[in-house]
Length: 88
Image (cartoon, rainbow, N blue to C red; front, side):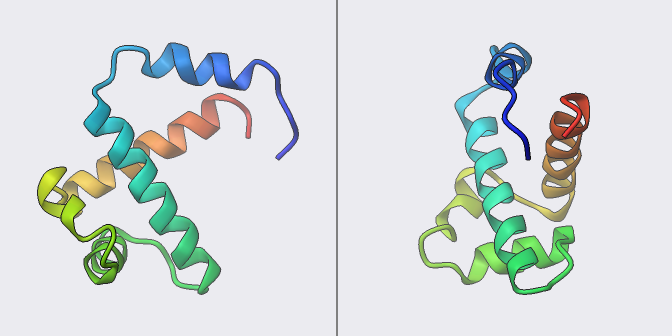
């Protein structure tokens, strides 16, 4: 990814009024996607939920953030649109 000075501003403006739970869900799912990708596993809603469930540090987030396969899919779409909208 090349450096874009306007990228943090674009992210800030897009998510300015989002809840901290959404921010936490975005970070949690993004982390899990990167971990699965590193292990050459296709990140699907089911595989992400399974990964989070087996991670001692992130497991409590399933209940806290009410993560389900459907909500994870929504976060995946949000993450993809974030990077698509910025041209990355």
